[in-house]
Length: 190
Image (cartoon, rainbow, N blue to C red; front, side):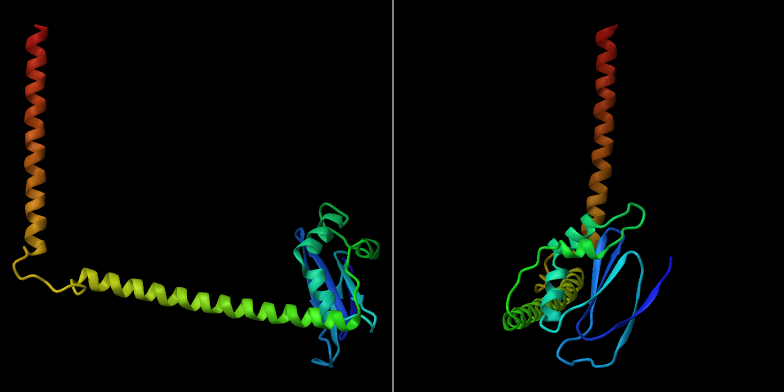
C-alpha cells in the first residue's frame, strides 16, 4: 500500500477508515499550534484542508459525530479494506451556518465535552473511593469491629463447631430414616 506524506496543520482534517469505523484527527484552530505536521494518507484515508471561511473545530465536531462516522463507514468502498474518496465526503450532510455561529457552536460543544470529561473523572474517582470504602467495611465486619461485641455471645469458633456437630447428627438421622424406609418397603413386597 502506497503512503503519501502531506502537510497537516491549521485548517486540516484527516479522516481514516479502519476496521469498519472512522477516525478523525485535526490541526489546531486559532493558532493554538502553529508548526506544520506530517500525516500519512492511504486509500482508507482522506486529507481535507478547509477553506479559511470554515471553522476546523466546528467541522471536526460535525464529522466526528456518530451519525457522520456511521455514514462514512457505510458509504466507503471495499470489503477487505474500506476506502474513502472525495465523492463520498461530498455527499455527507453537513449543516451550513455563518463563521461566527460555527465558532459559537464549537465553543459550546467544547465546553460541554469538557464538563462531561470532568463528570466522568469525578465518577471514576468516586467509584474508586466507594470500592476502598467497601473493602474497609468488609474488613471491619470480619474483624468484628462494626458493632460493639456482647461478651455474652458465643465465640464464633464454638458456634461453628456446634453447627458442624449438628450437621453430622442430622446426616446420621437421615441415614437411619432411609434404612427404616427400605426395611418397610421390603416387608410390604414380601
